[in-house]
Image 1 (cartoon, rainbow, N blue to C red):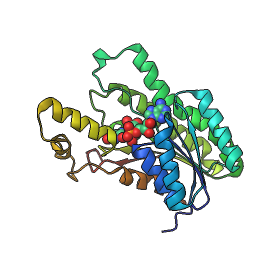
Image 2 (image 1 turned 60 degrees about the vertical axis):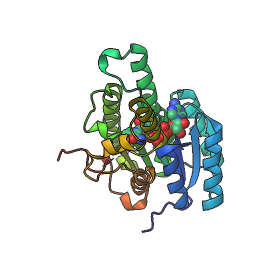
Image 3 (image 1 turned 60 degrees about the horizontal axis):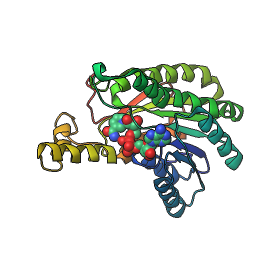
Length: 262
Ligand code: NAD
């Protein structure tokens, strides 16, 4: 399948690890040049080196926190200066803390908004005007399967990420006439460092064997296993590609069937 991504320019935010990293490398495998950002440089530089050496693409990196609006806008500007255009923008960030509503503070609500909703606004404002001028663009947000099936102890994520869906749907309508598609991907349980660390902590706390926590998660997943970050990246690459040119305003869950709704 020709994805049509060769020589396209793709921003992938929060791409030093996990789903962001796999997305960056999967886009590079399709021949897209990359602009990557994350908070710390070391892991980001490793991803950039791998993309250059294995896939022969150009890579621009910058160290930043996606919740800092001015830094995100400057980054988008720098990417355009470096590559002349931005074709694909994949937004991503760490998730807000998991806790019940009664334990959340107003400061955590503000932080969750800045990290998981406002950061997407910053990227959208940074890339959409030039995508409009070139009459081609893909904006893809990474959220969570919890946008369809909220999890009680993830109340910060549940509430703020619902706003992302409203944003995606609104922008898809507004920017469709400019040939820009805007979609959201909701990963289910995915075997990234974060989930592995959680599993190790849980194993230490409970005396469980390593792997038992992951197995306990897997038993409620129809496909009976966690996703790999590469499997989430595959859905993002498809949405970024020419093959998904008529798909916009949608949320695609990559959750192994966890969401039971129609
Ligand atoms: P991860 O912890 O493996 O990677 C997160 C990446 O984001 C890292 O590169 C980190 O440096 C970067 N990052 C975090 N905060 C940032 C910030 N403020 N500015 C810039 N970079 C930042 O996480 P992951 O598992 O790949 O998850 C990615 C997203 O998907 C998160 O929002 C997470 O909540 C969501 N998600 C993950 C799962 C899962 O099971 N892994 C499930 C549902 C949703």
